[in-house]
Each structure stands twice: as structure tokens, then as C-alpha cells.
Image 1 (cartoon, rainbow, N blue to C red):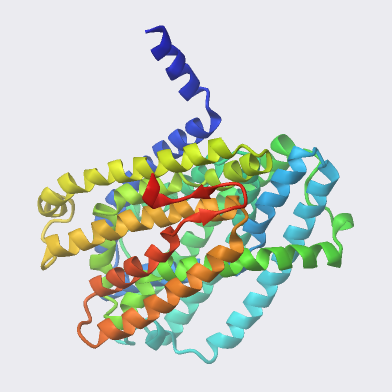
Image 2 (cartoon, rainbow, N blue to C red):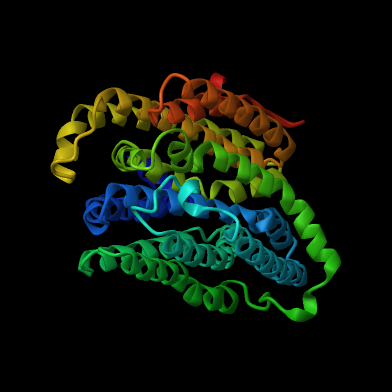
Length: 446
């Protein structure tokens, strides 16, 4: 009994465990909101085509979050190393030049977007006709949402700074606040019955996604990292160039990961139809809710693994990897009861909404969710162990396989599940063993 209490005390005094636990609790709340909001979305938008467009547009524009050239993610290991050596001035230089570089990138992307908007037909791009929404209104909506994404570059930067100082709960709370705000808006609003309503909803989405930054920014630099706030006097072109060069690998990696996992809505719109995105989203939020909860808990791993790697604590890294893989495989068993009661659950959740061949599609999605979890878990170790070059090569192979499979499958069927099958098969390349000069991690020898 004494041993048991000692073990429990050890577990609950472990910071990484507590961070992951509280992130999971926040994510569970977020998923509950997601369940509530989906049927509200269906009633809020005036057609499934518009709803499918909205899901696709949000997913596509969120992809632009990676166009910070990897600066936000690239500073994480730099800040961890500077904190280890207590180099406060170096942290201030890193942060100042990161904010400066991000601002330049935002301005360049905005100019590029305004230029391209005069050339691109957004109706064709998103697979939605002018009978559903006019080109003028669609351009306004895309512009508003894109500006919101650009502002979120700063939120992403702040979040990565918080991850580097082992404060992963705050970014999760920022996301939770935004989701609750959007839920309340949809719940109390009468619905987007006109194109003007869609424009107003786009403006509110911009505000809801970025308001938490106004609270967290002063908290970060007044409380958690005093004397390190961005300063114009610390900006120099050499430091900014170094950040961009070091972040370029992270940018390329994140972009390749996005093509595999975050680009599915757009791929479905291209290879199928916009309204099929709604069916995909329903399975994403029903069958995929487990993986959505678990993957957010991976957020603290990158910085934690990098810190252990710098301290030569290889036994800890191996232990976390082994326990993580085993936990993912055990948790995956819970997909079985989900599949058994899925039809009844969807009818209860969204009455009168039917999905043809539900169980085969759900089984495919469940399998893809397991691979998604294993790939994203392993991804944290690639970055934490400074194996970016290895990861880049494997991601290039994965995306090449994915492209070939998508083209081949398109000749046989336009069903959205073939996009999931393609990306799932391709992602398995990421599960090959990870080797450093000191040790090896192999998912197949756990």
C-alpha cells in the first residue's frame, strides 16, 4: 500500500503528466462543444453546400498558419536552450526578431493575397457555384477570414513561446475560449440566412479567434518571461535571417504534414464534391473525437523531449516513447464500441441525417485515426531529437505516395473515403525507426 501511494504521488508530481492530463480535460470540453456545435451549424447555414464550403475554407485558410516560415515552431528549441543556460538577453533577442520577422511575413502575405484575389475565381477554387453564393460575397468572406488567420500568426508565436517554457495549458485555454464564443454566437443567432449574415459571421469568427491574444500577451511578458518582451532595439537583420533560415525546415515540415492531415477538406472538395465535406466532418467529430482529444496532449512533448535530449536523458526519452505507443494502441480499442453504437448516436445527435454505408466508412476512418495518432506522436520525437532532415525526406516520400494514390483512386471513385485511405497509407512512412548516434526508437519493437 505504501508503494502504491508513493507511485501515485510520483505520477501526480510529474509535470509532463499533469500538463497532458489538464490538456486532455480541456480538449474533452472542446469536443463536447464540437458535438453541440455541429447540428447547430447544420441549422445555422442555409444549405449543405454552404456548410461544406465553410468547413473547407476554414481548413484551407488555417493551412496558411504554416506560412510563418516555421519561425514560431523554430524558436522553441532555441528558447529551451537559452533558458537552460539562463541567457535572458538572448531570449529577448530571439523573441524580438521573431515578432519582427512575423510582421514582415504578414504584410507580404496580405499583399500577395490581395493581388491573387483579383485573379482567382474563389467559386471554382472551393467548388461552389454562384447560385449558392455570389463571387463578390465569397471574396469578402475569404478576405475577412484570411486577415483573421494572419493575426493568428502572433497567437501561434505566443503559443510556441509558452510551449518552450513548459506552459502548454494556456494555448489550450485560448482555443477553448474561441470555441465557446463561436458556440454562443451560433446558439443565440437566428442563422445565416443571407450572404450578409455570412459576412457578419466571418467578422465575428475573426474577433473570437484573436481576442485571447490580447489577454495572454501581457501575461506572458509581465509574469512568465519578464524582461524578455519584444523590443525594437533588439531587432537586427542577421538575427532575423538566422531565425528564418532555421525556421525554414520547420515550415517545410509543417507544410508537408498539412498536406497529409490538415488538407483533407480541400482534397475532398477537389476530388469529390463540397457537400461530402459535411459527411466527413460528422465522422471526424464522432469517430475521430478520440484521436482529436489525444493528439492535443502531444503538444508538450516536443520541448520536453528536446530538453531531455540536451541533458542526455536517453532512458527517459525511450520510456516516454514506449509508454506513448502502447497507450495509443490500447486507447484505440475504444473505437470498437464507438462503431457498434455509431448509427444510433448520429441519429440522436443529428436527427434525420443519414450516411450511406456508414459502418465501412467509419471503420476506414477509425483505422486512419490510429495511424494519425502514431504519426503525430512520432513527429514530436523527430523534432525533439533534432532529426528534421530525416523527417523532411520521409515526408517528401509520403506526399509523393499520397499524390499518386489520389490520382489513381480518382479514376475509380469520387467518394471522400478514398482521400482518407490515400493519406493513411502514405503516413505509414513516418513510422519507420528513429536513430541518433546514442540510441534508436522503433515502433515495431516496443
